[in-house]
Image 1 (tube, rainbow, N blue to C red):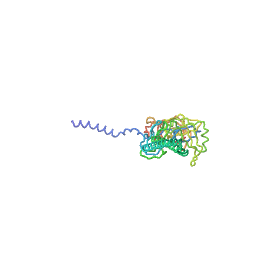
Image 2 (cartoon, one colour; image 1 turned 45 degrees about the vertical axis):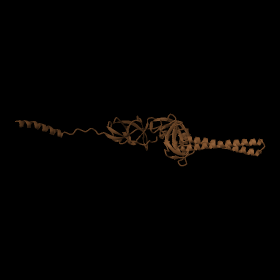
Image 3 (cartoon, rainbow, N blue to C red; image 1 turned 90 degrees about the vertical axis):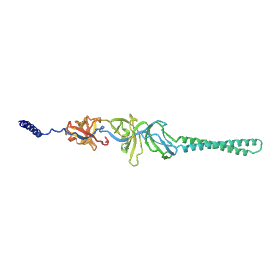
Image 4 (cartoon, rainbow, N blue to C red; image 1 turned 180 degrees about the vertical axis):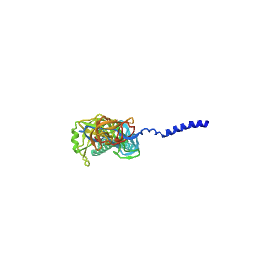
Length: 364
């Protein structure tokens, strides 16, 4: 009886298990797809003319010792800010001190010779008064005394030079500024005037550009200059032309020109890539995007913005196409993240994993 009851219980359970096995599996969650992304690059008006360049300090110089010697210590590193009169490096002062001692001894010897010559001259004058010697003998002693005093002045001047040179064993910062490069190291023997540091004085920054011969007048006559840093593409600085080298480079036929960044200072890193824009207007709604980022339809193109791991189509209007990408107008910002490749395979609201793609800065 108990066996019949157990069979009645197991048969329905087995049937339920069979039905469950026949059901289709629950659909898996949509996988998160990795996509290449980048930021839209701000552009300028179509009438703009752009000159690429590099940020430099207004005053730049190579610092060197004024005397030869062996570098004993280096006190600063590249990138350090220094104050006027700060010790940057020192030479081994042993030889300099020996030269000072020798010069001091030479002065002492010259003083003794001058004192003896004065005493001899006085004795000869006394003898001349008594009629024991002639005037020519006195004149000869006078000449020797004058020569001894001249040698004394020479020795004193040489001592002053040697003392000054002993002070030159310390290389001092000429004014407040920044050490941009270290050329000499401790233990190295350097000659007088051999560069040890590269130094940028002050906080004023300017852009060095190379201008083709046919565009020099355009630069000079530009009513407005704008500077854009590739490191800060969303910020534009006012520029002012400071100088144009009239002598073109014999190899490139380019003229060096320096454009001062009027509203920028020490916060702008030296060596930063920049562009000087000679333009009548700036259009903040123009951006450069990769050609492969354009999606949507022919009637309504757009780019995919990635926000919190989800895609959203932002409508754009293509303005022109370049070898480096498409210039579009739309509600974009330099901080926005857009899909830069495979945009036609993306759908609205898709979960994606953004992978940043670095692309070189492109001229406007």
